[in-house]
Image (tube, rainbow, N blue to C red):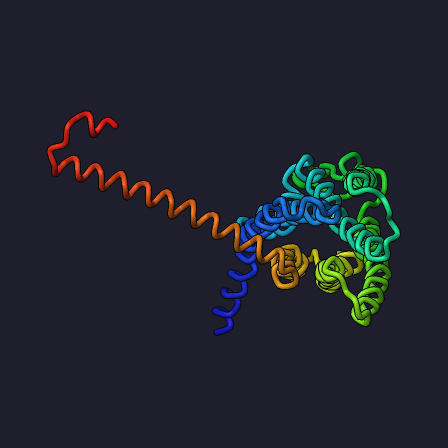
Length: 328
């Protein structure tokens, strides 16, 4: 019985990251497609949502997918070659921190929009949002640039890749930095902006004249608040454990399952955006149903055309019809 349970846990921990990657790719791609439709293009905040959906797809191909290869094939990308070590460290840190700070910017954008602090024209707001996204990604890429430059080197015996640096101790120091950049600072800022958003929503609720635009603001603000809350709840434990218990968790006893377990909790969050928007945003549900109906109509129309052609072909076989009629 114990052996069967151990085998079952092994299968779950092994294939869950792969399943999560496939599911997240599909759901976040749908999110990206739906928010790229004409109905949402006039809203500057949607730029943040589309950027986050794209980053959430990439995140699942980082540490999450590495866990599958580690458990299934005993293949560790960070220790395969120096190049893969540098790429893995840089890619995973940049993409995770970018996800957190884009969510902070999205919360800030909701706060400023609800309080009417920004009074720019629509075109200026779109440009401002795109500019902030690009600047954020560039800054985070520069902050982590030392990883591909200095981190990772070959052990003197030539048999093992060391993920640290010859010039200074990268880990666990960078785990502490990642905890600050990925969780602590974003958490504090999200809390501040979301408290202000909630306060404004309460004022709107008490108001006797709530316009339709205010209702739309309330719906998307609630979805952003839930997203921020789940982000802090599901991603913080993994980052804290990696920062303060890195040595213990990399031991032979725990590395296979604990790494996968905490990474899976963190990675699962990045598959939830579709469900959050589907539950909280009526417009998102409507566009999703339209997308499905459009696909069905195209499929049914193609099937109808094939059926008509088949019937005509069968009629030509069973009846003597002039060539001129057939070629019309």
